[in-house]
Image (cartoon, helix red, strand yellow):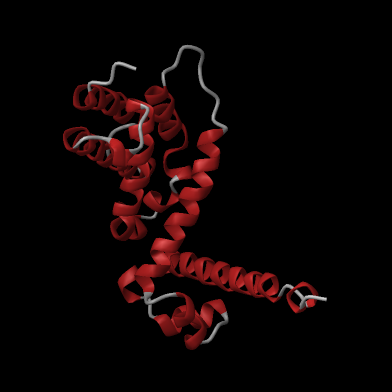
Length: 198
């Protein structure tokens, strides 16, 4: 009998342990961000909160910025699934659907933008994620397939979406424009910048 066929699937249990460790680190990091500034968090503090050793931390992350990026990517993965199941209004084009989703879910779905400390460190990741979706919604194409001017316009629009989400976070605390006002401004800007006819 083949030895590989009889060996227990060690990678599965290893994967479960790794997933547990990564979840513990992300959770601990978010809890620490609730009570202190990102620049004040130390790796030792994070390891203690997550109940892991420093060597274990360094097996998975090079530093705290990697943890922040991991948190953002996890949230965006969840958000992508929510976007797929988001109801489309009859007659609504893909770009309007994306805008409606961002407006409806705003800070809730892209929680990383709601957490201002994470937003400042992870904005490029969020902008890339949004740019990929804007490209599909506005041009029915992958971001990498767009020519340079359209790609630039798409990144500009994605940056606008992130700015709107940041404004929504401010509006929810009493500052800034209302979410409705910001969504209206964003729609106008995106139509002008993207010149989307879809």
